[in-house]
Length: 312
Image (tube, rainbow, N blue to C red; front, top):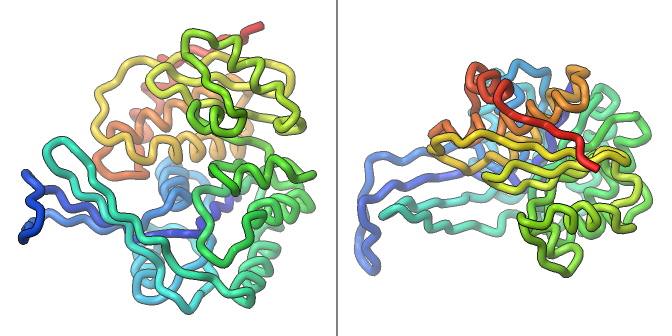
């Protein structure tokens, strides 16, 4: 089973407008409200692929109940820890080809609620072969909280795929117990190492992945956007080249990449096929209007067109 963790979920609200007018009333009749957060995007994509997945994290208030109900309607297994404060909203205003976002900070989780979640996670991870940790931490969780979850998962030999940034990622990289995979994009890699990289100089990116902070991380997948990805698996490097596609909605494609890798890992695919599937899943998400969804037929079409080359 794959367990997906979302520690700061949200209701994602989308308001499409022909024109955003400031300091006056804007009306729309095309509002969409979905269960959001990077980990829930991962969850839905694994579910679309037919994987055995269970969602966990923290949910609170009426917003939390809405998210739980949406997952139930989709037939997705879930075991969340209840918190007192309200789960957040994330608002996207789509206007004139632009996307203006208003993101709430979210609830503050108490020490007691943190302890209850850790107890729940210890139970769930006993049934998991793969665990995904995605996105930000709600207020109240310590900055090394993901490190704690990785250590718990390690005791049960579950492989942890981590997709976070900033202080949460830095704390994990400082820790003794490492995740199985991290997936920084080029900007995040630059932030970690304090240097700039160019797509024209892949050798510099390869050398950067040999830095001591990445020691003992089995997989590092660096997203290069339309240029595909560069991956390091143990001592080997791979260049992944992807075909050009017509993009409808790129939001959640990184989460879908994690979902594809988790599914491939759980299914026991070979190394190169793991890379092909995770990239194909990210591409398929970009062709859907709904964030965090894929058409399995499109995934298979892209899978066949992706080139994975082992490089020296």
